Amino acid sequence: MELEIKLFANLRKFNSQLDRIELDDGTTVVELLERAGIPPSEVAIVLVDGRHAKLDQPLHDGETVAVFPPIAGG
Amino acid sequence: MPRITKDEEHLSQVLAQLIESTGEVEKAVATLVANQGISKRVAESLACGLDFFPKRYEANAGTLGSEGQKRLLRSKALVAGLGGLGGHVVEQLVRCGVGELVGVDADQFDETNLNRQLLSDLNSIGLGKTEAARSRVAEINDAVEFHPFACKLEDLEDNVYDGVDLIFDCLDSIPSRLHLQDMGERYDVPLVHGAIGGWYGQVAIVWPGSKLLSNIYGTRREGIEKVLGNPPFTPAFIATLMVSEGVKLLLGRKEKENTVLFADLLNNQWQYVTL
Image (cartoon, rainbow over all chains, first blue to last red; front, side, top):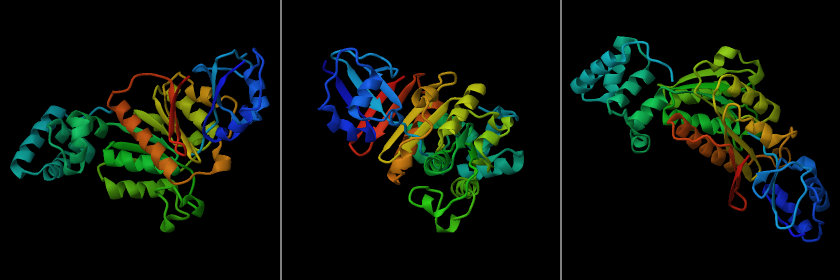
């Protein structure tokens, strides 16, 4: 399946990994992160088509996934 | 907003006469303070109510209007954390003329703060952050009443939140931020949340009951700032957004929504996320 994946802030460093992975329909968010080499500890928010998604949500062809890191400094 | 205990209409009439006789708002305000035993911020708010701006607020007038300036002078904000974000937030709130500020921070300044924390300088190393904030507020605007609390947020007495209209979350720890979210919920006060790390930052309004910070952080207890640190421009930028959002809230110009703005200053990308 084809997904549009948008990595935000320092997670953009994983962009180069995304070109190399192929995913089957129904792959979950956490599986996507693992395949892209993104440690779940570096992820705070995942949106699928603009909606807040859980890590075990299955993904489908044509969806857009946006991933944001935790930012907590003051 | 705190109520004025003395007869406001009467005081306004006295002030109007004083402005007419002295021809100067500042003199009239000072006389009203001396003769009527009211605070300077209340006297200034009455002047704004008469559409007379003290000179220090003249440049705010076109943006805030007299009613808006009056509201800010009657407002009370709690600033939790007086470091990178909090220093800039206090500076701007004081210059806006937000009349009462509560500042909370247990720390003292050290040399690692000098790159970004507005209230720190070579003379303030070792000084308490609340003490530095108190001095800065007094230097800028002596009408603003500043209440310092040099303790951990979790150790604040409940009555500190009395009369607080708005809370600024300028903290640097996720557990403390979640505690502040609970306090906002308990006292029905919205939070203006800001957070920074490297080139990146986020701003959101946390409405009581929304649990927005819980939704943002999930089970995370540390952020990217632990690796990326904090350069000087990111706190200044995010603090500015926090204050403009906070002023809009105090002026009643903000809709309820659970939206986070993510700012990427490296790639100039701004992303709104609704949770």
